[in-house]
Amino acid sequence: MRLLFIRHGDPDYEHDTLTEKGRREAKLLADALEKEKIDAFYVSSYRRAIETAAPTLERFGAEPEICEYLHEFDYPTYNADGSRRPVAWDLMPAEWTLDDRYFTVEDWADADVMKSGDLRSHANRVITEFDKCLSRHGYTREGRLYRTDNGNEKTLAFFCHLGTECLLLGHLLNISPVLLWHGTNVLTSSVTTLYTEEREKSYVYFRMSCFSDTSHLKYHGEPDSFSGRFCETYERSDQRH
Image (cartoon, rainbow, N blue to C red; front, top):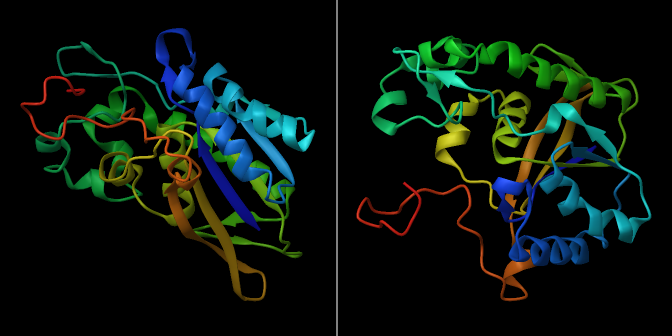
């Protein structure tokens, strides 16, 4: 089975919609995806993801399953003084790199900041719903891998968000999502591809073959969005700090 994770296009976060650039990205994405064989579409309940998926769904004449659990992983966390942090997983490098718990898939949610927002509970809910979806397609989570009685070559597409995508990739690959949140950037309208490998009968692991692919933009001269990135140097006041 093949999984496609697709981040929404360039966003207007204030209105939870796409910018004009985001709409161009969504159309170019549809141009690329219509060449694929996709068996099922799962779309975040947030409008910017729905608008990103719309041109692709129109090409396929398909109806998606709207999934609340795929919305952005935007639950609040709190500082020691009780003040709210705006994004749960947005930590300063000098903060998170000093706490070994952030580096393991078992312990990341036990770090003080993560516990302040009960992120383990939120993460487990997202992961549980996602695994239910995979189970309906014949793959059941057992420990750190999946089991199948009837493996298949279906393709499932998930239109979601940077934070949620990294959480699910961490689950599939047994990597702390904190390392993915801070060590990678999922570009807008990008496609990340994973395949199952069933090297032993019934025992399955997912393997990532492509991460954050925006070749559908580059081919048409559409630049990557800066959304999701932070300032390249501290002096770049024109970039997000």
